[in-house]
Image: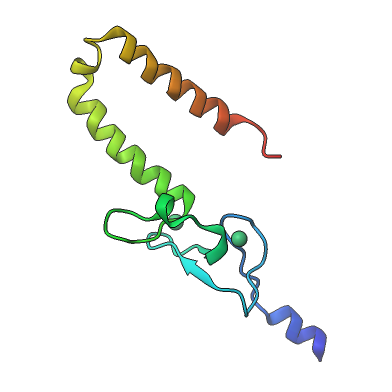
Length: 105
Ligand SMILES: [Zn+2]
Ligand SMILES: [Zn+2]
């Protein structure tokens, strides 16, 4: 009896720490994909958009990339004028890729 109840219980995992969110823990929901996250796991200053919606890290990165995309596509010519600033940007992008490709520890 207890076992079948246990099986029916839906395990909800936090999109940040990947631990289960148990009943008494406070959680928030990504306003785009609906992923749940412990309230304690999120930094609102990082994961809140300009309208105050909470995003999961994945959707927050995508939103930032969309903005980035618009800037790059609109101003790519201006960004090439100053070669030092231009290579700064390229260097930072390379570091982000390196970080994202590193194995999770
Ligand atoms: Zn968490
Ligand atoms: Zn999301």
